[in-house]
Image 1 (cartoon, protein in one colour):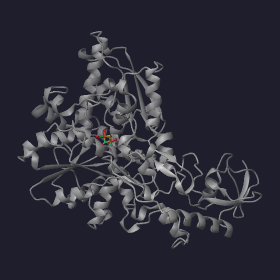
Image 2: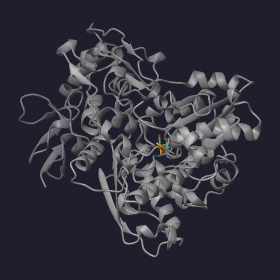
Image 3: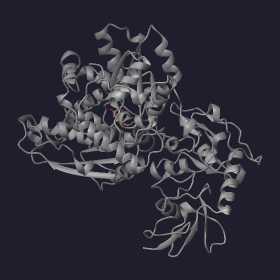
Image 4: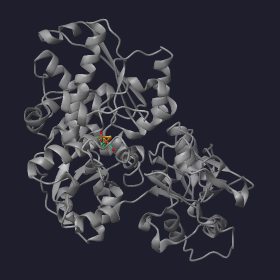
Length: 586
Ligand code: HC1
């Protein structure tokens, strides 16, 4: 291992380590505005410059690999002066309306300016004019705040394989944005919000719906219910000082109650319902192919992640018949809240307001799709991100950490562990396999370890195969059939997988695709900054939540069973089709 010195401390670090990583190892944090841990270096912001013995100029620590004998100074007068100049130039171009910026304490530019003791800028710069793009339902872009770090460009192209944002022009005239300065709504943006998740300043963020929710909560003629997505409970705590991987379900419920919601429900309930509907759809397609020798689009793709739906509609319209017709759990919830539940409690659906708390920005756009009005009204009225919920809790001055643990309300607050794991990449697949095994064999899964480890974790594309035997008579056509499944997360991985399937190189029966790296735990609306370590901690937390549940398989949810008995009839029945299914490309 190469031996180096950092600020006179000698250490050995593995070859290939960058100066930035080695410095961290040596106990020195170097500020950066473009680098994201675990991602390739961009070398764009130049804030991380260091002095290296023998080099004629200062070097960017993020993009310089260490070499034997390097003598690095991370904090010399020359380094401090250069960082100050770079920051002052960036500040001269940044529209610093800090008092009315939604990044508040979370702005990386302000934080670094603070640690460097910068209180102003002597440069006039080329103050970018405010250009606010609010053309999509999910995201705003404010070019006046952009510091051209290129994190958004990198994540949009390299992680998501979308390519909606580009650097254009040179020097002071550089602009980051869609080609020809088009509005986001007119380009291939899928509204996943991964750009907003990495933006160090307030240049890209979610379009907040906090004010609309406050209005609903203060309108006494409205019955306001809230649903929380599976991934919120493993991340919300980070906004209140808990380490990543802390589950705060009970405190989240208590906070929602104190915010004034009339009923606190769980998207997990309709995640369980999704397994019933989507599992039935898969078995029905398999039966069509294997028994009737008819045609059915296989593999079946999951449909719960709206960024993936937007991506497929934009880039792979020929694959739309393969996508499950199930609405996402968010939308199933809205449709049921304004029909079944409204009737049950005697509230006119026009007076019911459904609010979602989602880790995902694309959910805001999904709620506004014109076909999502099965109840006769917009099924989901307002969608908040995890960050927006944290803001509301802070606004009312609640001591979140001091809250007791409270439980969700019935009937839609009750869910199984299978629903919890929807939050993790591979979770929908695991939940489906848990249910399929028991429904098809009539036997309980052996043992307590229900995890399908082949489809868990952060590998980009994961695969598993299984053969079920001793099947119930209805399912005997599956006897001996090798069922092949695949899971992809992050749309770049999804693109590779789908292209492989289209070329006939890969053959599967069922495929789970989640838009964001790691699945919803890594959604574009989650607390910043979501590194791989954070993703893994949240995933572990979700598995712990699942393991602590009384029921861990969707078909065991007693309230889902009651819903079919009292209202829906059977999976894929007439009512289900009316309320819980949809079509794409509209
Ligand atoms: Fe997701 Fe889903 S798991 S899409 O990742 O199917 O956003 O958490 O709510 O709808 O249940 C997101 C999470 C979420 C839906 C569910």
